[in-house]
Structures are given as structure tokens and as C-alpha cells.
Length: 147
Image 1 (cartoon, helix red, strand yellow):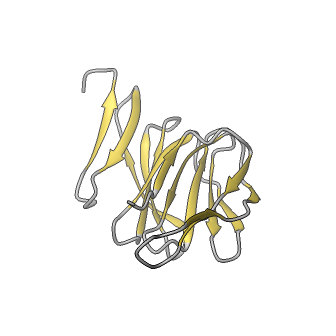
Image 2 (spheres, helix red, strand yellow; image 1 turned 180 degrees about the vertical axis):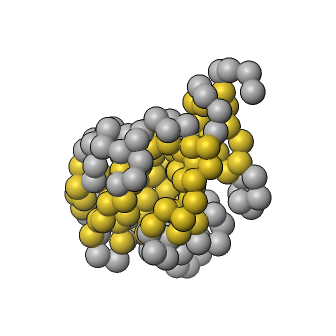
Image 3 (tube, one colour; image 1 turned 60 degrees about the vertical axis):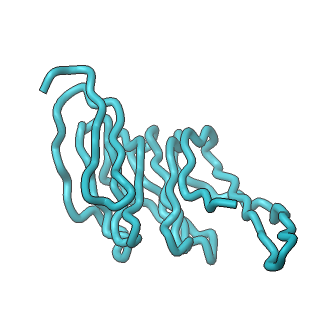
């Protein structure tokens, strides 16, 4: 079974987190742990888990923020320097989170150690979505206008 690290279109203001537990051994038993409710911002849109599983990042398109949830405690903090953050990807080494902000038409890079925005890159107009490749060496954006 592959590990799933990325989900899209979370549709509730309270995020419900379920843990999938796989027992070691030849016949792995699957079970769902009791879900916890964690308050995040308005209109959560996308989420991404760091490779080590220690932090879950949630874009909140309605409140212009990104919620950072420490998975060991389920406590959330908020990064509020966005307009309409939609998609988020985590670098394979877990050191950076890449947030596409459709309101500002830019990509913000969050340092996952400090949970602060370290850089912003402006994009053209009418960008609809951006994603980073698995090695974090380039990202692509879809746009409806000519460059």
C-alpha cells in the first residue's frame, strides 16, 4: 500500500483527521483510528503532509491563511500573509512548502522549520493552479492568458 501525502478540496471549516494504522507482519491489518477535529481557517482548500509526518499544512482560501498542524499534538497555528491560498506542495526533503496564492498570483515558499514565508515569486495574470515536481526542481502553472 502506498503512503498518501496529498489531498485536495477539503470542504469543511473543521478538519477531521483520521489515522490509518498498518500493523507490521505478513498479513497487515488496517484500522482507522478515532478522528480528531482540528479548527482551521475559513474554506480549507488543500493540504499536504511533511515527509516525516510531523506537520500538516492546510490552505484556507476564505481566510487568506495557511494552518500548520503539529501531528503529535493536533495543535494548529496560522500563517496569515496570503490573499487566496489554494494549492500547497511540500518539498521531498520537507524543508519547504510551496503555496500558490490565486488572489496575489504568486508562489510563496514557507520555511517549514520556522513556519514563516521566506520568499515570494510573482506570476502572470489569470493563473489557475500551480504544482511542484517531486524533486522540487521546478514548478508549473496553468494559465488562461498568454505570457
